[in-house]
Length: 426
Ligand code: HAM
Image 1: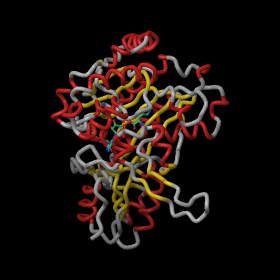
Image 2: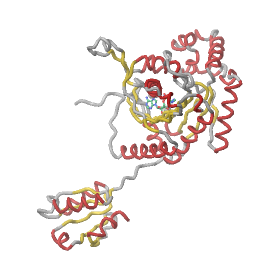
Image 3: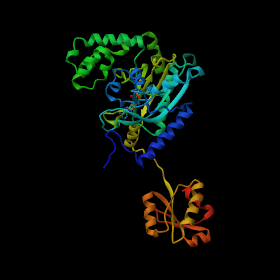
């Protein structure tokens, strides 16, 4: 038997009803904040990710699904391609490629789709997973650098999670400063690591040289006491970054979005500047980050694009669904009625009635004239219908149908003209 590949999974009903409810709500909220959808390819030039996410990150060093293309054209030969491990790089590439900066306004873009990372699979961590993300990017003249955008994004996320009915979330907030702050902080980390790095894991030993900030990502338990004592980023922010972070916080205070400052949170991607954040959820165990994001003011330039500061986030949809389910949130996709044709030759009549009802907005399922009434009622129960509508010769002739409520067993005749309203109303 052929099975789904490790780290991938099938999403089945009724879970997919909840996925669809989440995505419908997301599109509704994004529209209210003037975000519009962008769809970028699922695979890209490998360099796009190594140059944006960063050569020294776990994603690029260990987790990407990369292959050499077998394209026959000389230009495609041995091109290195990668399944996208995240979508911000693709969005910024598209922004540059289509000259969206020339429109002179902010681009507010969102995406929903699969991402791929070769991580060790466990609950809440998959090799194919789904992200719901959004980015605000544009020329500085359009206000893309303003801390007001950071606050707008964070306030939107709080509203979205509230409207989805998720309760136990915490916003963890930090600032990783600008490129100059990061350079000074990296040097401070290098100095602090020098006397102790020989006792640390092999990854830390390499990162201490190449990209010391990434030492903070280390999960090896023996290294944690050393990491706890390292200098903090907040001590290395320049005045402008400090003021920027204060402005973001005061706007969150003004709208009443609660947050916790978490200075250790540097995020697993290299492109971040200034504001970074995660929303965590207590019911998710080890994989507690429901979403993550931040500002990336130099990303466009590092991909040879124009100056285009931006901020965005990606929700791990798999984890969001797990968190909602842990809180008992389910999708109610009720089936109003099950249409039960009763007796030979009644299939066409039942189809006709179902057509009328469905066109009138009633959710119904349709049985078969070969079923006896008892079997139809059982099938209606399995389908989750509230009512069974019996379609027999007498009912069709008399223009009135027996409607049975499954929960109570109550049965009453309803005229054809009133049927849609009756089934929907209840
Ligand atoms: P990220 O923190 O790497 O950020 O991923 C965002 C979210 O995706 C995580 O918080 C988590 O919920 C989910 N996620 C990541 N890996 C997995 C996995 N293996 N299985 C299940 N869920 C996972 C980014 O991807 C950035 N592009 C976010 C961003 C957008 N920053 C600015 N704009």
